View 1 (cartoon, rainbow, N blue to C red):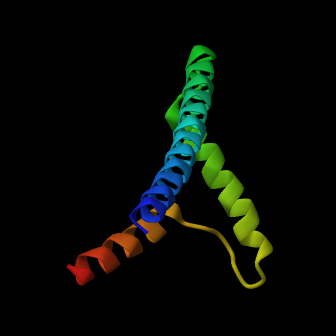
View 2 (cartoon, one colour):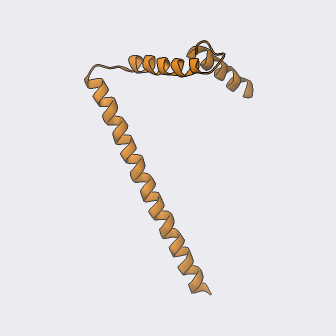
View 3 (cartoon, rainbow, N blue to C red):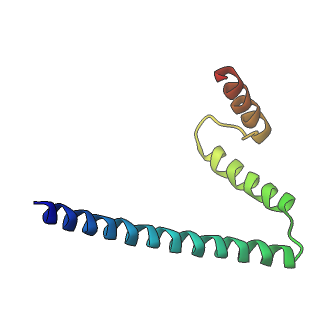
Amino acid sequence: MELLLLAGSVIITGIVFLWLVRVIKATLKTALLVAAIVFGLQFFGIGSDRIMAQVQQIINYFWRLIPGQQSFNLDGVLHQVAQAAYSMI
């Protein structure tokens, strides 16, 4: 009985370890890809302010596709989120 329990725990430990290795590999690949993209953008002189402006334009475009919506105010949304967070505390 103890041998069966030991074998089962070793198998489960091996499965969890292999899953963890896959997760770490995927995380490192993603981190390196993001770092390469950021480095490439910085190399061409594209800063974070221009990226955020473009992201806001994209959000505005999709927000206007929703019927009844005029524009998306990122500052207003962030202010509402901050107020909600402070009210929870």
